[in-house]
Length: 382
View 1 (cartoon, rainbow, N blue to C red):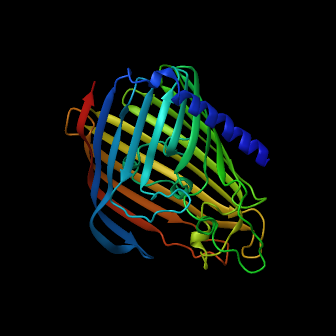
View 2 (tube, helix red, strand yellow):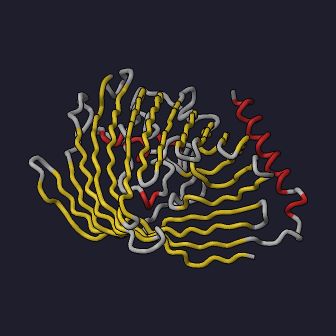
View 3 (cartoon, helix red, strand yellow):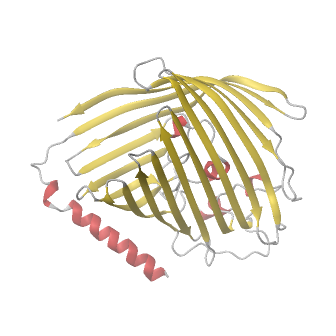
């Protein structure tokens, strides 16, 4: 298996180095563009919780401040750098980068059909919530909320038609140390680091009926520990007609080690490894732009975190079930959609866990009032 991994990496690396040495990168190719934008999302959040539910806290908070730089170096070579500056993370040892850098890559397009991307990029996951800009997602569903989205590696994309895209991706499967990713093995559990700590992803995106119907699907595989496997399948369907759009996403992951850390974070001892986990999330979101300046948003998602087999530290059964409901209204005061004001309410309803090892979270409700503004700082084209 290790030889297969090495061969796949060698093929993609050879293609990428070949494209960089091609004649299209010679000095006679002029710089095409540089674009810099700033993304802001401040809001006032009022938090309620407990049983019975009472007001707990309120205050202004910057959810996101993002610097986004991108553009063309040549007609075929482009780049992107994106960093969130409202949070601080350490320099993770695996990639020698902080988690606040989402994108730092070069992309080379051989033609309209085939391209290669190298650097830090988003892990290929199916569905539309995951692929929305983070500043536009008021609350992520359970599974996507725990995924380490942005990792370093290589991706090849092939578009046989303008409405179809196939991709193959090889990325690191973690940012930092192995222990940070899986936790500390309890006494009696023998685990070793994986020989090849990489994600392998296949993605398929397509659209039909003049983009009215859009599909996004992906399959992911990695080894969280030696001789342990993780498999994930995800997909989303979106329908858009005039002022109305709706999408439905589904995610399923089965892993011999809790690599997401979702179940582990709710245990009595979250520092220890959790084995034999399953995650399932399904969500739907509808938007109705009933007026050019007004939009109504409704969203609902269900999460089920469970263990499919008993282990030394955890029984078999449902660890956590939750329903999450979201409703809000957005106002767009300008001619473009760069600025909008939002009022969003979010309710999280947690079922009682069957597992003695799980600390059951309390239901909570949040009311948020704020704005999202994409500020185009400058754009230079040659």
